[in-house]
Length: 88
Image (cartoon, rainbow, N blue to C red; front, side):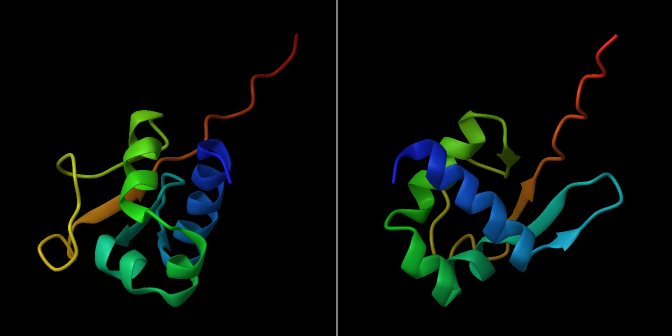
């Protein structure tokens, strides 16, 4: 799986495990993602995928690197997808 595919899968998992917000975003804690069996089976390097998604401005979280235990309560926020551009 390449990075783009992993980021897309991560978005799906955050939607599955997270809570939808009024602005169209989804929130989930790092601990929930890290400890989920399905995520563990999908992502060989969850932390690396999170960093790649953050770099692409798909999601946001505090800090640069999330570590199990220390950062379990850090919120990972899947940003809302931009609205489709209307064609004139």
